[in-house]
Length: 166
Image 1 (cartoon, one colour):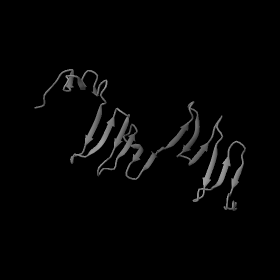
Image 2 (cartoon, rainbow, N blue to C red):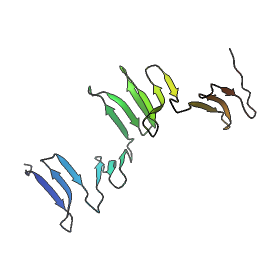
Image 3 (tube, helix red, strand yellow):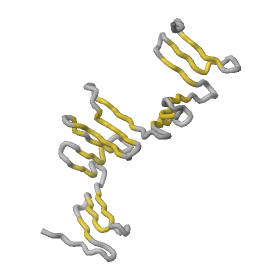
Image 4 (cartoon, rainbow, N blue to C red):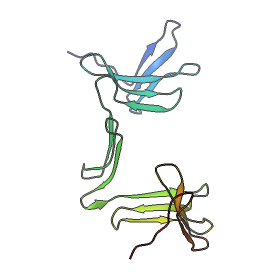
């Protein structure tokens, strides 16, 4: 039979200082203390670390030895709408019935780049932001540049013809 505790359980270090606290009143688990970083380490049945949360750098790591990590964020219907996969380095945003969008904001919180998964649109620039698109050839030469401020498009550059086919 499991041992029962009321209210709060404290795990003390060798100096009798609580380093792990299980608080039933607030439903919190506190790991670490002033001067000591708290880490949460989760292992698989072979003893390999598969997930860590580190307080020293605010880092969440999933995956590890023999485990490709993935992070899934679900909607209220328990469907994955955002998925990050460590093994393939893929990021999926959206799902059937829930199109994904990515909004990139400036330091004032204004959208400057929007990727619209529903309509397949990419918007570059906004009020106060010149939206440009630059495309490079495999040799690193800028061969296409579209400038949102002046509406100009440049094709070609340094040994690359810039052709428009219709």
